[in-house]
Image (cartoon, helix red, strand yellow):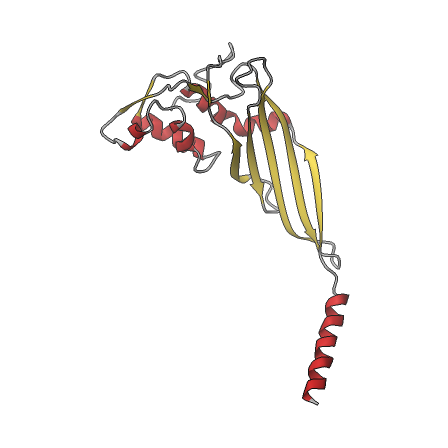
Length: 203
């Protein structure tokens, strides 16, 4: 008798789970305004370009650069700086107040000749409750891609992407940025003639 009740209960649960409507995930990819995308990453790009104009940098200035890059790419500021330092060990030596830059590499930005902001796209995923039609889970990724479009073979395959995240259907602000690609490549890449070294407050 007990066994029979267990079998009946198991079959009832199976029937209920089969009848329950599952949530459906809707995915939509849309182009994002390139000028707005440029604004989102402009200061970080400018900081990287500005660093390429320096032979040395004061420690307090370097710390400020790291903080400002982190505001766009959380945790990436120190990596971006060290990629351009002559010797990364200098950062650990706190007695050094002036840090040498320049190691034969360049961090391409859209302030450099041949580098363009080539695309910006938002991929939104929403889990829809079929009974209410409401979005119960929302996640969006905004991918902003830079690429070298010039003729120098040393940079031909270079690209970098900024990936901004948003998990709220109500708050349209972007946060939790991640990063893919490379900061620096061996070689030299001239800045555009219209690069303004005072566009932002210098660090």
